[in-house]
Length: 115
Image (tube, rainbow, N blue to C red; front, side, top):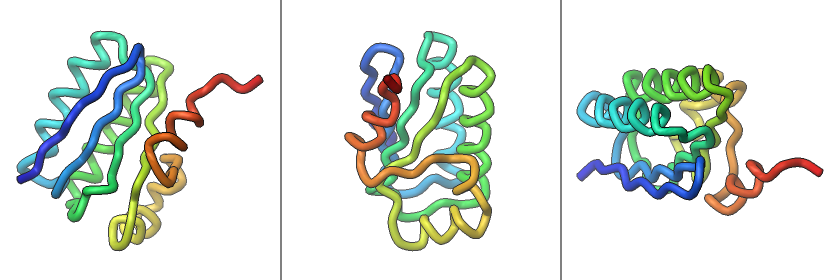
């Protein structure tokens, strides 16, 4: 089953992608993100450690997420990428758009203000 579990802490949202990001789930992601961005979320971490499959529509939804959050001065970081998902990100050159981190905590730390 493909689900998205959302955790919100202040203006940061942590999204866990389980299973696949494809035709059936990309629209769910877009709807949730739109509502949350309208509600003030500016920092998004997408935990891809349980992501097994990503389609072209899934890639498109990540790009739309990036565009929406950037318009409001926010940022999206991806973490836990593995195997073929990493290869897809490199082939599509999405590794130039998104920052990748080993895990949620590393991504969380990357949002800390630089002193």
